[in-house]
Length: 397
Ligand SMILES: Nc1ncnc2c1ncn2[C@@H]1O[C@H](COP(=O)(O)OP(=O)(O)O)[C@@H](O)[C@H]1O
Ligand SMILES: [Mg+2]
Image (tube, rainbow, N blue to C red; front, side, top):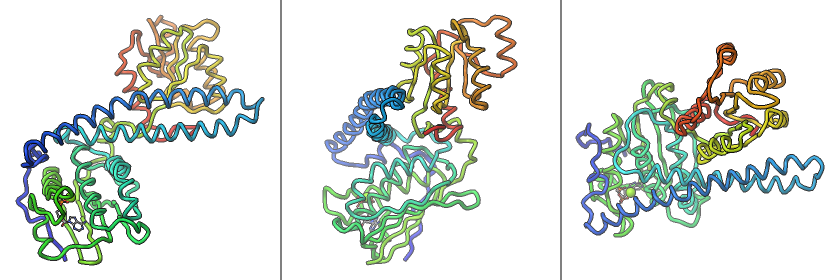
């Protein structure tokens, strides 16, 4: 049984009214309040998570240095790595909640569908696991036209419907699938379930606002109507195949966007790893603070200390190095790094309070960027984000 989207296509953004529907005023109020609170809570826990992760990373580095002499530290380091990964997971979830609770339709452009589907899976994972086994297969799908918040809502709606169509209690007996594939000019995502399926009479009405077969408090009947509006507003289509007793597959087709379109708009998919090399602890701390929210930041107070870290195989997305330091200055540090670690000079950017002629010649020769003090914190963060996007997973992880 198949039902195509037969609703008139809307080309405009879904209005805030469409997103909250004509709920009773107090319900609408409560939902809006919850959205605001969720965003606030996510924001509040984001920072402590960031510095918890930061401190654990620091502890791992310190213990690593001692572990050669004290092998008994190894299992403790392994536990801390576990804690660091868990904190990173929680940090990602906090970020996802911020993504889903943003108000309005969001900025329309190239969206990393992979990231949206991962965020959806992370948020729904716990509920899904009571009902079904989740099958994910969307590795490598390219970007699509849309907004993160809109597409997040689309796939969360479809996944929640899928799990609600499956009785809880025997997750091994059921599957919810999220599969992506590319067709010329399009990216197709299928959300399938092995749940109750739908009769023809139900299928005809599922995209109607307020149509629900669920008890009050469970269904509002708005999910698919909103989903349909969002998808069509992005130039997409949504289709459903369903068979009573066997299950349902929703097929969403979206406009593909060129992969390059993503580079400048995509938030990094993981924390960056940054090394700050500066003999002035105040400058180092200022840079660390600017970057700490979304990066793991290590500080070295001299070129020699930084070289020792690199020699241990620590990987960094960016190294910010002061040009003027006693003993080993920035230029010598650069030369040492290129001598011992080849291509890693690619990640070095210099910090400077002013550049003389000799330094200028050096910078031109090496093509490395220089950031002038005082720094623009957002500029520093964007520089690292750009490197994280380009590099994928950090070296040495
Ligand atoms: N995956 C699915 N399996 C079975 N029925 C579904 C599925 N998705 C949607 N439906 C049917 O479509 C109706 C409308 O869905 P929706 O618009 O999301 O509203 P709600 O979930 O609040 O009922 C549901 O009540 C249900 O009857
Ligand atoms: Mg629903």
